[in-house]
Image 1 (cartoon, helix red, strand yellow):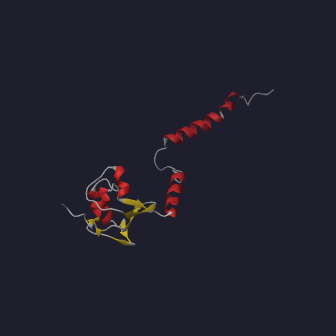
Image 2 (image 1 turned 120 degrees about the vertical axis):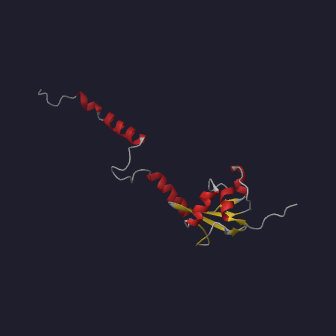
Amino acid sequence: MKEPKTEVRIDKWLWAVRLFKTRSIAIDACKKGRISIKGMTIKPSRMIKVGDVIDVKRPPITYSFEVLNLTENRMGAKLVPEFMKDVTSPSQLEILELSKVSGFVDRARGTGRPTKKDRRDLQQFSEDFSFFDDWDLDEDE
């Protein structure tokens, strides 16, 4: 019978708990400095153990996950809570909410095409003032 693992490579674990779609993407994230433990960026080959807190930078925030269990095999989404716990700070989650609320409000004029929502808002705005079309302002009475 196999002994349970005491350490697992970080890239395999990140992929197995579905934080990254492929192991290659997890490796790239480590190499680009987006994965850290205790504030130190780590290599993809770094071994992790139960109790480690892993920080994953995904702009605009940094998520934190505590390792509850180790695995090298990818699992279904329902099993993920047995292997990791989200310990992201409330201040980081607040930043995420603010970025969702702001949406495209900060979009610079002329960058990209208007969205469907932009078109609907413009159409609604123009319909609100359509009652002026019936007025003949040039008529003298």
